[in-house]
Image 1: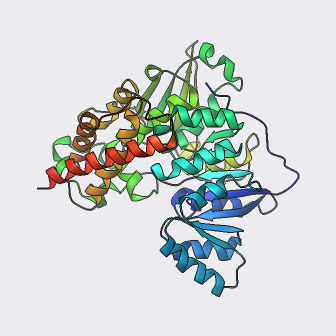
Image 2: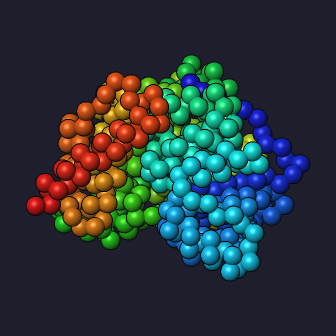
Image 3: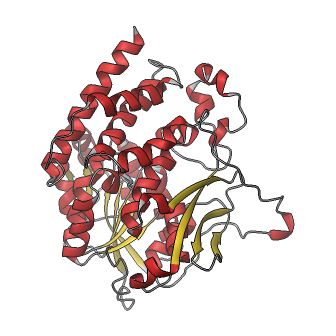
Length: 406
């Protein structure tokens, strides 16, 4: 178990922030929180994948020292637009540039919100450089696991979870990490159940991408919205929690909570239950990560208890959410199985969003990929090995998608 609590940041000067994935929902919400505290934070670097116009708009507003786009073509367009706007922002391209800004000596805080395995290398770079790392990228732990947590320990980084569920657990746990095992019985991750919680499982084969993306509580990107509909997001969060909190998989539970008011719970040895509550707004865990151990204004609405309906809880139906069990299956399998699951799921969700497979076939692709993809011993000992396994799993998943698309 890694001690995630190191030391508060120096509050006597502006804290310089690098936002990886600034054009996504988490990145945009991070900038929204920062906007509310001009005397506390300074945007040092931004990165975006493909949205040149959005990243340009952010550069105009924030005047960062660096902006990065992995694709050289996109970076070239951004570079020309930045020059035309008369900005001093230096535009970089390539995957190494993401690592460079994450580990830059002038950076205090790194918001890691790049979606997918592409976020692993810059997360590792920030960890090894000893940054305050706000982790919204599940894949750093789902794919990286032990390698990533070792980098956090060796670099002396401060790791703070940004997923609402993991932030909730973190806020409820005792501050002394060494007492977690003796004081905590298990943790409970809550899940909304997504848009299909009450839909007949027999009809899910006809679910459309737009229906799967119509989340009842949260405003999210299309990929994570589909993951919420399948509950694969919760499966990945179970894997993430295993590494974040050092708990064995059998001490991590999941329960449906449709209202998304209780974000997760800690069950103590004496059967006391500690829960973190709030409106379903990602700015709350983001603000907590930016300011820990203090608390700052997030911009979220205040939870009004007088207007709350009943808070309800349900078991996750295995017929509706067959992918959830894959979390425990892969954690009990060969090291690297979780990376295979993550890669296969990215391929499967993309195929569904592009209407090449049915909604119910997402699980079929994931489950079969775990059978067909061979995990070699030692493949998780390096970034290169993990990325090679990731690429292999994607090829396997693509083959399965092709067979289903015929």
